[in-house]
Length: 488
Ligand code: GLN
Image 1 (tube, helix red, strand yellow):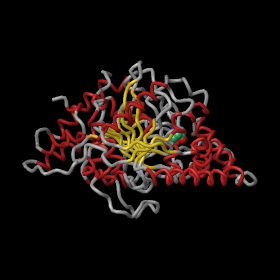
Image 2 (image 1 turned 180 degrees about the horizontal axis):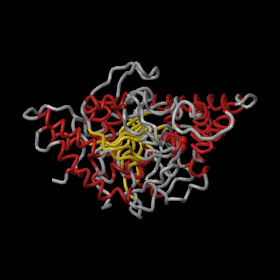
Image 3 (image 1 turned 180 degrees about the vertical axis):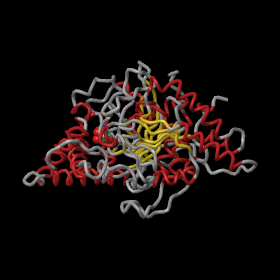
């Protein structure tokens, strides 16, 4: 049995029945990682040896006893901006190149509570700033479907690792699309939960009012399984919602979307959308109609302000959050400086890459006296309008369906010299973060050149179940999710 080809649900069942040991699982994944990782470069650090030690201990503990928790013995990869106690967490930045967190993020503590196995930490755009994983201080990851294309970003390492079968599932983070967008590029499933659904404690902050941790998986059922474990209130995150967590796998019982009203926002099908992507998404809308959904036009008129609004708010929050990297508290400190100010400046000059510096400057500018009202306050007002657009649309429909990316994955280097072009590729995902809603990306087709295309389903706040139900119904009716990259 090729263990690395199984989904999380299949592997968990197999393990639960005692048909395979944790050590065998780690061995299979070690082989697979050794085989493809030199090409894909999904990981920043691999800790397969530590995973093996854990696996053997787990097997020992389980001997003759086999009622396991769903994630027990499951080999996962974690985006390297999520703190893992005792395991290097770099944020793909020189600033944190040697940072070993003394604690686990809450999402990680919950996985650990089920005895999951950590295979390694995955690559990302530095501090999750980017849409291609090219902004990593450790070099880019590659798209398993085409090694000269980007895997998307910023959780590109996690998406590539799942797509290349280098882990059974992964966690990413999404501030403006960083889970959904790489999932779309790599032909896997990525779920951004509602803001507040999953604790942000231990997620290295980029833009605190937008950031969310979420699953990247091989299929929709796996996303539900993983969300079950990481979701829920956490006293360590004051923005986490104190609401009950349903069993998300129950949302998968229905294989249709009967009685669901599904909105298609015309603003998302305007200029700039690649015809192949448009065709694939419209075919998916037809499929949802066949499955019993009632398709309706909806309007999200403030869409044209989304990119500008996001890049003011996200950079403003980033400039504040990243002030902590000053050479004193964490990570890198530049040596042999004459004054304290020089130490601060050199540390930041050496520690941050160009995109992070650009964002700190943009954000600082937007927050500075005299410009605050013109930029930051205006962006906050626009954010409210964007949220109200979604609220109005969700009075008429239960789900909104859109593309994830305007184009399939682009070539490495194609947009890295032009930040504005890179920012524009976020147009379909960032409004969802500004509004706070949950959204999923699932595979819905391929370009002529064989690159995956993603479909986005957006739901009302805290209605992840509806999002999962719609996604699952579509997935069961199609076989895009069964196609695997051929990297070997
Ligand atoms: N691409 C967006 C950005 O660069 C979103 C990144 C993210 O979601 N972390 O900010």
